[in-house]
Length: 294
Image 1 (cartoon, rainbow, N blue to C red):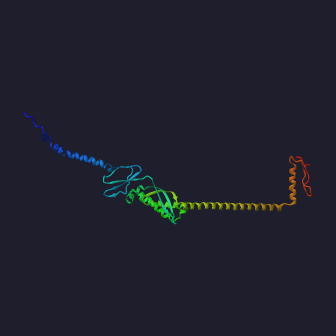
Image 2: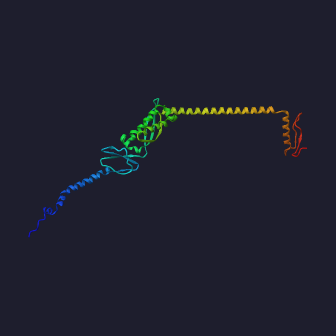
Image 3: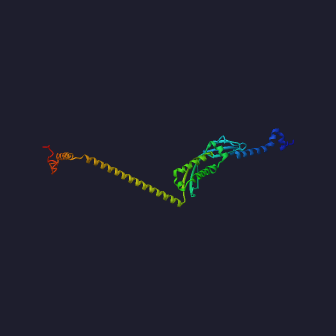
């Protein structure tokens, strides 16, 4: 008896139609699965977006544009792979900047600034649409410099260097207001230094020193004048007092006071004999030794 044939055709004929259909599609299914895994790996970061601490996100939809009515906070967010999440730092940031200002008389004044700022979180969508992520270079620094140039160019180099009347503070307040109109809060603008050309700086410092010396001399003169006036007033008081005393002194009053003084001296413990007066009208002889009068 001959053995039955067991070739591939025989095995295929022994399977069900579904199994034969799956067998024909198996290579295609494997390719599809591999492609899906590859696409998922590539798009993972575009679909699952993480907002880190100190950040906020603005979503740009491919079909509708920037989302301005929602800000994406910290955490994990799921978005469409064709959309884009733009990250913004919401912490306080500092921008250092230096520039020159021409004073009203054409002298250059060098300023160094430290600008502390942060975006208005609730307005991040509008900030992204109108300005963009590089808003510090587009708005914060240029706007601050523009306002300070405009305000300080109306003053002389000496007025700027000495901050006459608080003009630097007033200019800084205006710059903060201008920056705040662009969805950014400029919390503080610090003028770190004001530098003038060496010769101009030396001339201004010498002038200020001379002004202080003049003020010191004026103070000394006022002090001397007040002291002289005090002495004149004191002298007038002494003169008036002596005039009143001289008007009330009489020979009888002087004799009476002399007797009282002689009596007190004679009755003291150390007195024995006191002789006062030798001419006519002088004081009488008062013996005594500390005891009662005899």
